[in-house]
Amino acid sequence: MATFSKVNFKSLNYNTFRPHYPASFYKILSDYAIGKDPSKLPIGKSVDLGCGTGVATYPLLNISEKVIGLDLSANMIKTANSLKQERCKEMGVESNRIEFITGSVESLVTKGESSIFGKGDVDLISAAQCIHWFQDYPKFFEASAKSLKSGGTLAYWFYIDPIVVDYSGSENDTKEVKISKLHRSREIIDKYLYDDPNFAGPHWEQPGRNILREYLEEVNKNIPRDLFEDIQINQFHADVENAPFPGQNDLDIVNHKLPVSAVGDYIGTNSGYHNYKEVNGEKAIDIPNQILKEWETELGWDKETTVEFVYNTGYTFMKRKQ
Ligand SMILES: C[S@@+](CC[C@H](N)C(=O)[O-])C[C@H]1O[C@@H](n2cnc3c(N)ncnc32)[C@H](O)[C@@H]1O
Image (cartoon, rainbow, N blue to C red; front, top):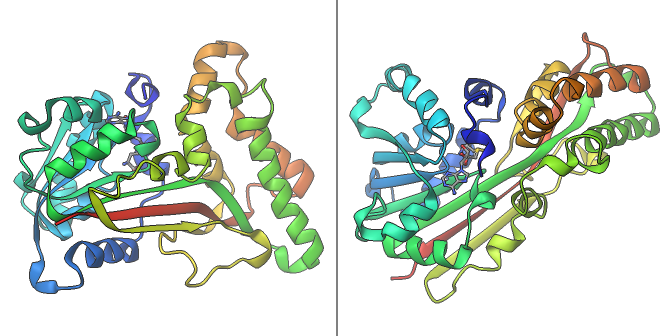
């Protein structure tokens, strides 16, 4: 997946505008990894694949003695390292407990024991919002199983595109009008990101984006049942007609009362949009801005409007067979 590696990809924007996963989710992950036995904390070594700027890497320090983040983008690793002293200070942890390395997951698969994947000494492998880019899932699962201790955890999770589920002033609309505005807000995003071939749609790297949009079905179907057990697959599909969703989503990424521009900021970090701009140069339109303009014209959401938005999400956990 090359887009995040491009030198002009804004990795600091990525860190700021992308969702960070809730503490409650790390608790679910931690409980799974230790079998709810607190005496097993901290676990020893965790490896966070496709770590980007370290969004999911730092929180692993709460449960793991040593954490290594790996990403093929030198740009992302540079940002991750630049944030290191500050993040470790905030968390009150020694900075030598976390390390970021540039490299591809495929190189770990090839190098096996001579890489950070080690010799069956890893307690937890995580891959947040990135497994859809990996190549050759059978080989990936095999190499992960070799690098994990027996009973060690492989966990991957994802989110797909923001879905507005409420907006300021919605109490002045009838339920029908509200639902129709919420659906329309999503259709406008889809037009620019996927459906209209004149915009970002054709510029996503494939098959990665489609694998993500299909809830990692392609990944999950390759899980080798002879190597892994206790496989838990959890998915959340937001249905705007039944929002909010208390207790329904383990990986509950909710943005409360943010200005509409926050959705635009997120869309600005999409790799499909980045590629569209590169290909079209000066002819490229500012897609996030265009979406916000159409929201204003069609839905009456101006810059004073605040929105609540969620993401469709999912995760898969499994344990290396004993
Ligand atoms: C959408 S970002 C996710 C970053 C972070 N894990 C998070 O949850 O925000 C995807 C990251 O995966 C990295 N990536 C994609 N394919 C990879 C591969 N084959 N090996 C290593 N990193 C990869 C990209 O460079 C990018 O930084």
